[in-house]
Figure: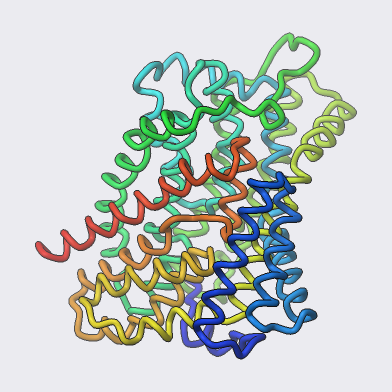
Length: 465
């Protein structure tokens, strides 16, 4: 397993681009967020432009030189697009190929036949949890979105009743369960046992995903009533197909990147030797980009050819898949730029400095620190790394189980209330065709439910084990 050191991460962190005090930074954060929300809700300005302006306002009020604020924003935008953009593009190609070949119809028809009515939200949370186990959150979204949208449309379900359970399954796996990077970093920081953390993480994750998924979806559907966005809905091919891929071939293609990434995670755990050739091979084929690329290439043979696609038809499918995602890439990238501006201005360090004087129990302290950094920077991973580094000394005298619980409660805190400084917020907003307010009432509240429920379960477990 590749081990990350919190001390190394802290040492590599560049100095803040401003020398502003805590009060000035706090005002700058609030002003930047307020500008973004105001421009989008009041003047209906495009989210990409609003996030860009909000980042510059944040830097200006924080006292950062304009050139450095611009550099921070563009660096964050570039790194976010570099990390997520290719995944979104490959996911869009795979989704379009699924739709045009009839493979998505085959999956949706099977799901609707096997799990109709009240069982559908439970089926979606199960599917998302299984797929989300080895996947990054963004990869899971691009794989699940076509299925979620088509199930909601074809089955005449509320988008929130279907979408929220899927998002909950992905998010809980991302925040609590190794081999996701956040939990792995926290495990390394506090010297927790990976096996114990994984076992307890699953114990906490199951009730959490039930409450934040199918149960909360009932309320989200009342608060947010949005139709399935036609621009993101995989369209049926204009010409009728004489045949379509089988359910087995389609499911195998969709799950292929999941299997590759899970295999990489297992090899990392079992081999744990970066010089080992087997681990090096799986590090490559199990990386998100390569795994999705392999799935797209395999899909040409398992989806396109069985549906009778010519080479020209496959090329047209790829072209059409990329056009609708241009705006999403810019918005998600700008969200990453705003987050990076926050970090470079020293907002994360400000939260750490303030939290050093808090005198409360170790587990609750870890959750509160992770929550504060998550709210300030918008990054679950940054919140996990920073909180784990701060509370790591407290784990020295903890038992094996309590060290694992410390990791889990940090992960729970890192998911609290995703909002406009989180690139994931914009990803969900655009894919589901919601307004900022609707995204807050559904996605942001769901993330908060996950954080609070998982945190409470960890605290309860600490009393009995």
